[in-house]
Image 1 (cartoon, one colour):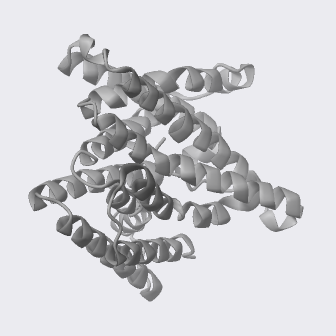
Image 2 (cartoon, rainbow, N blue to C red):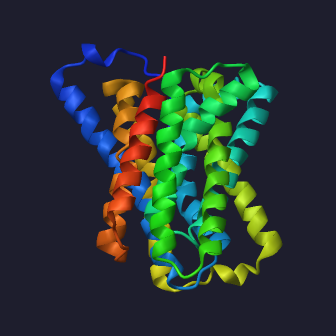
Amino acid sequence: MDHPGREHATECPCRRPPSAVSRGIVLAVLAAAGFSAKAIFIKLAYQYQVDPLTLLTLRMLFALPFFLLMVLTPGALRAARSYSLRTWLALVLLGGCGYYLSSLFDFLGLQYISSALERLVLYLYPTFVLLLAVLCFGRRIGRREWLALALCYGGIGLAVAHDLRHAFSGDAIWLGVAWVLASAVSYAVYLTGAGELVKRIGSVRMAAWGCLFSTAGIVIHFLVTRDPQALLQPWPVYGYGLAMAVISTVLPVVWMNIAMTHIGASRMAMVSTLGPAITLVLGWLVLGDAMSGWQIAGALLVVGGVIMVNQRK
């Protein structure tokens, strides 16, 4: 899973003891950091000339045992027997859209743009959820939400301007932004369709089943378009694939859901907006990416806009 979810908390976080709230905030920060580190691992792996689909396949294969453990518990198996055909079809479709397509588009985009710009563009997904609600359900956008959209897209403009100043090919930047925008839209479609299903089967089980079905799709895609020997990669690539599976996929999903039980979905969404800042700093420290005032200003605008969208009534 590449993005923090927005499921509903079952209990008001204000009734939790301070220690539980503190633990929830720490876990929420860890989840945001784990999701944000994914782009760094991808960039490091690309130094070994691995193609996006092969790297994504390795990531999902390494994560597969963990997701199997989530769905093969006695409780999960009992629950699965009660799922209707409609539920299974929804899991297949949403898993394909939210994890398969979203991840593939994201990996493709990171060939062309910096990790910081990728994370900022990806964090536009709440604005796409809002726009889908307008298109599909006739929701009306208020003045506050128009301001939030303006902040988000203004921030992306500043971040793109930073990358254009530090890149040799402007066309490549726009191609990368287009791929990551497609990733954000795919994830927004997943969130729009997942609301009721999450309430019925739970966010962790839904994520696990969705990732299992998406893994099947990714492996089929790989076998149809690649020679299986493409999985033979230098050892560092396996290390980064495993790191993505554990640090940026499985653990953040678990941390995020535990955090939501302590602090609620709203606070979780607020903490998750640290993601772009974490990626920006990691890109500077680990990858040596340039950091400018334009990029920082863009990040602040995007984070501010996302906070406003997440706080909408």
